[in-house]
Amino acid sequence: MMAQHEQNTEFMWKLYYPSTPSFINDLAGTPAMQRLKGVGMNCGCEYTSFPLFDGLRNYSRYSHSVGCALIVWRFTHDVKQTIAALLHDIATPTFAHVIDFLNNDHLKQESTEHGTTEIIASSAEIMEKLKELGLTLDDVADYHRYPIADNDSPKLSADRLEYTLTNMVNYCVAPYEDVQRWFEDLTVSANDEGEEELMFNNPEAAEQFSLAALRTSAIYIADEDRFAMQTLAELLKKHIKRGILDTSDLYQTEERVIALLGSDAVAAADWNRFRQLHRICRGCQHPEAKIIVAKKRHINPCVAGKGRVTECSAPFAEALQRFLDTPLDIPVWGE
Image (cartoon, rainbow, N blue to C red; front, side, top):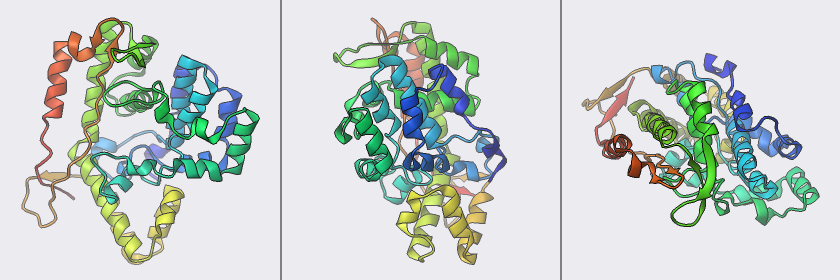
């Protein structure tokens, strides 16, 4: 593993809620949830040598999932919604959204959500704990039902908030002290559609958060990020076709997949080339240069009583439009 895996991002949990309720700990301790400790949030990019990803803390789907649950618990104190948030990524494969690239779903990035209900239902440990809590599979299998946990982009939800705040700190986009101040300004209120939504009390905090979130979103569509994800998807596809990997291996851990790649000389050489990627060339005539499109994740949160940030902050409205207009049609090549 790379040096950046030596520290983790679980320090963010204390920000979301002072202590983790026992029912979250119980469910998080099940084998199906523990697997997520071996699935990263940075979609394999952290294994490359691109400077953009140098020094990142280990940020796993497990850390993200518990963080989401704590945010939902803080703002709802509803066990059902909290567990739905905790389990929402339980079906995530290794390297996460890289598999969306493999499945040609990289613009929507939804294919990795498939199988959530089945995995929860197949976990005897989770089903037993749900029974003890008086909950059913239907109560927790679809977090899209609960707008504090999830809602349509560009609204603010616990899911979108958690990975944005953690990545702000992880990528040094904003210091922890700013992230803490912005988080503590949040409340829950009805948006203009009459739906409950996480939103800011203070327009200044909302603008600062939104601009920092946009800088974080720019990393997700950076040439290095897109090229790494596409390259890793092609690598996995190649070695699934060769029989070195099976698609079922993608639902174990990254450590396991890497070990399988290392067991074959051709796959190991491909993995090592991926690990050594350190520089992006743009618009070059290299035979393997490619245009790689990607989902432009962004957030346009509400300010209580004032509408969305684009309505009360011209600087953010202009910055958001520049982001949305960012061209992704320039061929790139990595070496």
